[in-house]
Image (tube, rainbow, N blue to C red):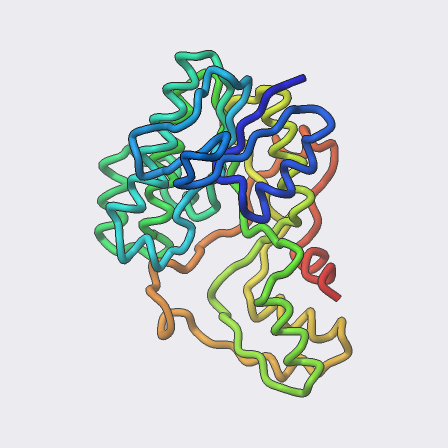
Amino acid sequence: MLRVLIIGGGGVLGSALQREMSELAAITLTQRRKPEARAYFDAESKDVGVALADFDSVIYLAGLTSMKACELDRAKSERINFRTPARLAELCRELEVHFTFVSSSAAVVYDGLLKSEAVLLNQNRVKGASTYGLHKYLAEREITQQSNAAVVRLSKVAGPRWPLVSDWIMTLRSGGIVETFHDHLMSPVTLDFAVTLLGRVALEEVSGVVSLSASDELFYTTAASALAKHVGCDSTRVIPRSTDTQVDPRLVLTRARLDTSRAQNLLQSTTPTTLEVLLGYL
């Protein structure tokens, strides 16, 4: 049986991935900053804390995922989202252990750029750029140089509870007003699709970049209006707002839909549309 280490496996995605792979692999989840545990890992420490050679595959789910937190502490974001996974990928290559790095659609804005160009893009405050996306992209560039490593780019993963959509539905059904961004895109995937893909990548030792998103992308306002119609509410109660006045404009996704061709081949299935994912919360 394949021995798989999931780093950062304590969250929704990690727990679901463990359940998905449990019949085909022996799973070990790390616990952060708990040396007494069977396996622990601190992404800010140079001490790996677990013997990577004991495993056939390592999946890196850890990360500083709050865009705001990454902007406030760029050094911490660099350590956790870039330096640590890149170092682990190199260690895994030396040990002939397969490595899977979970990245984000936020990295898309940097596609094709060299490291210095990507950093400059971020410094110039280009729309769509973010410290989070930059460090994910820099990690991707180094990890994909390893022959036994994969990068899995995920759009927003719609877990069992997505407060944004749940709040929309509750507000609309109670007769309230929903304010959403008319200039910010979404292309979410279900938790089931995400964990199935990650399991396939690890078990089949896939290399290179594999991306997963919905089969389309919608602006938040468009998505909320369509959802309103499906729950029998007046879509005019969905009010468009501009992200430029509410958040750092660099954090606005200029593209959310990803090239899912490799993912669909691995899954032998097409991904749902954005609206189909949202309707799953009804």
